Image (cartoon, rainbow, N blue to C red; front, side):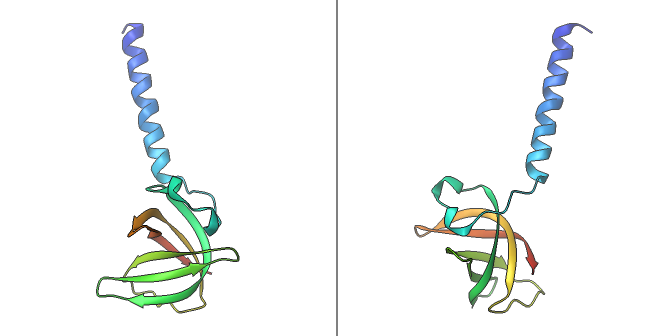
Length: 111
């Protein structure tokens, strides 16, 4: 095996490792007021209290607030009973709908 082939194999393994790590690493906790358009399509983790809940057929739209800001969180219908004033930790991707930033939740933990 020559040096070029070995370098190529190591490069491919490195790229695969980075792809796996980027999808499995948890983001650090972010304040809601810090979320802006630079976060679009990026994974974030926030903590806040449910200020309002709107129920739709396939999903719920929560307004989550912390001490500084608030944001909408889109949650698929789940067996977990969410109630106003519950504190949640939400991990998801930042999305924009009608010029409003929101988070599409992947994981929710009740505090």
